[in-house]
Length: 231
Image (cartoon, rainbow, N blue to C red; front, top):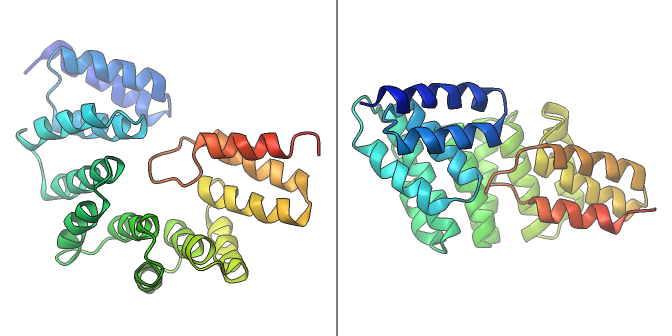
């Protein structure tokens, strides 16, 4: 155990909880170099590494976390989700879904529904994505992520923007700062020529801290803002 490494890890956790992500990742990096070895710190560090797109570093931390005393079954399930995200970003989406569906057969949670549902959209199998994301709403029809997943299924894979809009609106009513929901609602506004509303949605999306599970990447958001600049 490293006193200095874990002290830095505690400081990183504090910054992370306040949304100070750049400060947190710098503290995690330094703490990890100096022996940070607490399960909670390593778990949070791995999540932030993934959000910053540092997938190889995240994989190394996850492997260390697996060997750390105090890892709970809940931690293991979270690790599998993070492993799956890394696999997907490295081009192995089928394996990523396979790992998660194996866990899903034993334990069904809102997080599992949300991640598997999104990966099925990314895979592009419209029928499989539709069936899964409809089942997700039977599990919880007030989860904004699950509502957004079904909306994206209709919008991106089925080309049914009218049906999608209803689900985006429901998601927005529950979580008005959701990145993807705001991005897609901006697209509807652009189509309708309501550029002020579109700009508001895009600014809200831009203010969020994106993850690999966001369709609305910073690049996509900035592209749309440039598109409506001056309108």
